[in-house]
Image 1 (cartoon, helix red, strand yellow):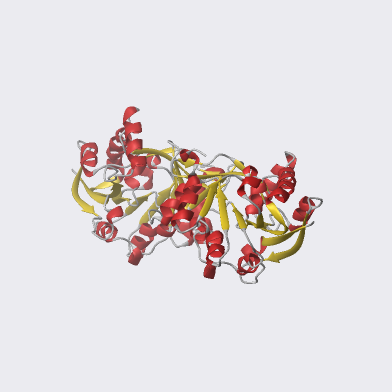
Image 2 (cartoon, each protein chain N blue to C red):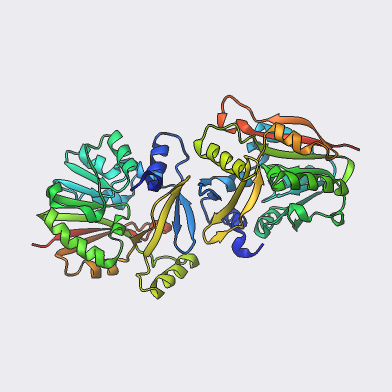
Length: 250
Length: 250
């Protein structure tokens, strides 16, 4: 990733350095654009995490690979609890923030560049909706099979996603239809991050229902053993987010 | 303005109705994009205004024309103080918010559509950087002359702008050079507002130094009688904003 493409990293770095308001802009390929408070979340401490996030991370064990670790909020928490953690991300500047914050092991790598040279892991972390990094169902299955080569027999994957169907927003419902018409999953969003003059390449990010996730994982030697939902009567908006625990079958 | 172009109005309306975080996205024609807390400002009450804004609005008198009135924060304040105020804006939804909040007189009009049919005014308000609505120096002079036809002899204009030269931001300095090379003023920004699937047409917004404003106003039968700066040692970032009071020469 060239520096002018590292919109994600620059927004994070500037916010970390106190030089911005920490507003993230995400643009979708139907023209939909929205700002959010992402960077604040990406730097949040354990005490500020949601209930389901705290519940999900309890499944982490042994040596940990955090895919799309960003500023390292999950990786640092686990490192502080004594785990050996490798954080990988495509954003060099995000990793710079993670290292500055104390993360010892980082590598600038995408989810499709993981090899046994990195060693073997007991846990693969894909929190912060990072199941989305699988991009599409075909690649999800292919990478889940490859994960067998970098994980120990009792390994787990802790992956978060968003059930896109739990919405009544006409903009999103229209996008689901748009996606289906072009042969994609409803929640296979094609997006990019923009910040100042930086713009990430367009990329696919896969958001799925629990049923869809089960179908994708079927036959990959991984088994979903638990879903942890973020349902809360007080936060109707975040009800659609959930974490899945995958157990390696051996 | 078609509804799909009313990005400004929709973001304002949704925030007013409590349906959004109130983040505004502005895109510049060099690719620079930034989110801000605009809608909160657009709905702010007098007590939350900056010092120079409170000082500037004290020059308002008689019947008032608020150009680009938005959600009507200035218009409503003056109406509540007993003035007759007409708010004009190109955004139908912004005017809907202004009317819902109590603004009695509104018209969906741009700055170049103002005619004596609207009646005569004692004050023209162009706060919130709305000197920018003049778009370019030539149109500024032409419209200032036309304002003679809709104002009474003792009329004033209260206009706010931003001295773009008071920055060290390389992104902005580069844009100034880009503008000069194509024969535009450094602060003649070409921008659009984006919100969800809404996108305003691209438009010019003219940001000038006090010296540049003097040069533009020269020979138009309006005279700048006072500049009110927002200089404050506590807010170095907002130091570049200022209000000018124009007195009609007769």
